Amino acid sequence: MDKMITVKDLIDNTNLQVYSGAEFLVERELTESEISRPGLELTGYFDYYPAERVQLFGQTETSYARAMTSKNRYHILEEMATAKTPAFVFSRGIEPSSEMQRAVQENQIPILVSPLTTTRVSNIITQYLEKVLAPRKSIHGVLIDVYGVGILLKGDSGIGKSETALELIKNGHRLVADDRVDVYQQNEHTIVGEAPQILENLMEVRGIGIIDVMNLFGASAVRSSMEVTLIINLNNWSPDVNYDRIGTENKTEQIFDVEVASMTIPVKVGRNISNIIEVAAMNYRAKKMGYDASARFETQLNNLIKHNSESD
Image (cartoon, rainbow, N blue to C red; front, side, top):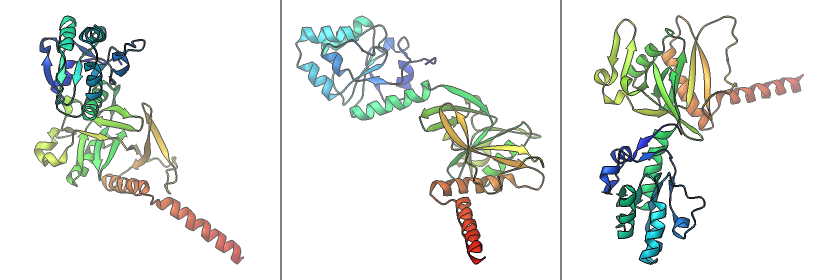
């Protein structure tokens, strides 16, 4: 990964507390989202030791270490405390041993603690690191929450993306980002979008300028992030294009490694695009629940053709 944060960033964004080494928080870098529970290393096996990861000690690791002699314990912990190791974390309010404190002090590595269970601590750290260290890119468009569906509106400048989003907001839906949407891959199935910090809660409306959506419509009109579940491309209506009229086309667009459902909505005078987008969101949810109107139409059509053929 090409992005880097420090242990201080981890402290500032989680409920972890500093036990020792506060003066080293800014110096220690985090470049891996995975964490390590060093069970094998405590036995002396270091062939594949992931030194660049946060080292998490729970009840199991601590109990095993306590059974060792003080000399062996210090030898193992000293080998674990490398120049790459960002931090040692102890869950369940476990008190680090004196050998641990000596090893990290010599190598300038902070010790962090938490009263939470090991699994909970692991989840908190992993979720934060996966979010901030994930590859990101910026997409020109508008991201809005419509009936719980994260819709990314795309299209040429001036086609009416922001104006459509504004009408959706007035109808009770929520803005995530306008003009630029920063997206990252949360896992193998999920793309999450959010606004760049400088554009958070802001929207550009041609003829008016920049407006603060939260200030004008209230906190319920915005949200900080949203899964991108449907991409809607707004295109100027063209008589030469055969638009999908039944809904049987299952198109997708790839963002990173994830295929996101997509569709194209033609724009022309007289079409209420915000209403169409609301229906698109409801129809998307219905399909996810197993109610596919296009499939039902095809079934009824085939039954009618079969019936007419038998009548002949």
